[in-house]
Length: 186
Image (tube, rainbow, N blue to C red; front, side, top):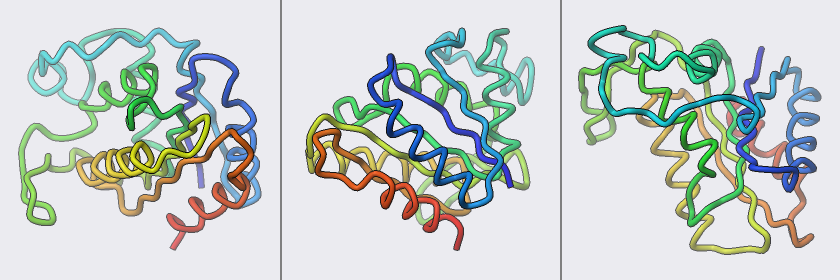
């Protein structure tokens, strides 16, 4: 099985958490690729829907966002690792995730009583989100978990899990990483 880890940090602040997650993935038997988003050229989504109309399944912007979107849909497990910003993703991760829209269909369906996009591909990866905060913040953590869950639902990930760790020493990062991986392996 392969895992694609999207490093959404803007600098080196979360590299310890990233290392713990990649180690846990290796121990669980995943061949893991880490994409350091800050080192990639990924323009913001234009919202033009060209990926649905002009070039179905591929963004009209020719930059690293195309390759990241292709790698995401080919993975068995997609992992977001990001500082939590007002409950959401870092700007680096947000740009990459927004550029995943070519991976879904422009048509809609009812899913769990909500309107979501139909699948473009038969198989989608499971999704885990690992957020990082300087210290615990229950409200930001709840927002982050909800955001990851809704991303997974819209993309039709078969399994999803999310957690937030605090860098103040109160979080057992290794146990949390293992728990995320076990939650999507069921």
